[in-house]
Image 1 (tube, rainbow, N blue to C red):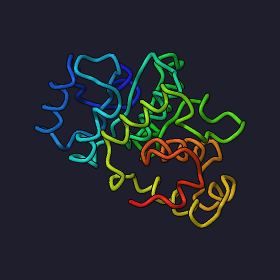
Image 2: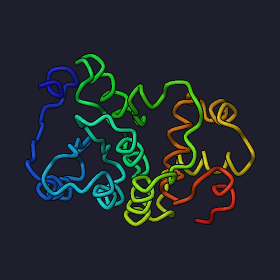
Image 3: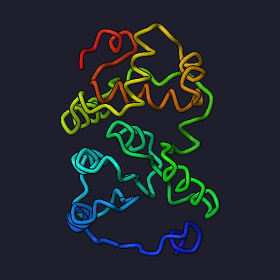
Image 4: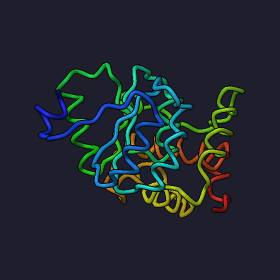
Length: 199
């Protein structure tokens, strides 16, 4: 209803499984946006959508989930998706998030953009090590998104988060999310290792 009434979509399809959704998108590559729930049957996490994203880069693919766990958000960004939209958002914020994704942005929840320390050492504990391993296996380094490649180039140039944000005209919080996603995707623990990583 939101997609039709608020965003003006004439047709909205609802799939009950990941397999069905993927088949529909493969058959209709003109589809503009695709939203997936982490609890959908067949879904093994955001990395399950990486092959679909690589086949259909023109489709905006985002997660809509009841989860607000930072690891889930980071895994979605590491998988190159267009965002992670919590179901808990009020309707007007939910619509704004969808409009942002439709316009080509990458939406992350407000909790990921709060001021605070950088998000280094993604592999600090066993759970995050497992997440990093799954992300690296699901998404080869050469398939970094264009924005992630830009952030990585800036890091290699010795720029800090604020300098990267100014250069790329994005928020510092968004830079932090991309840095954290790079750590997961390239399976390294800190910015120093990012500067010497190879694609």
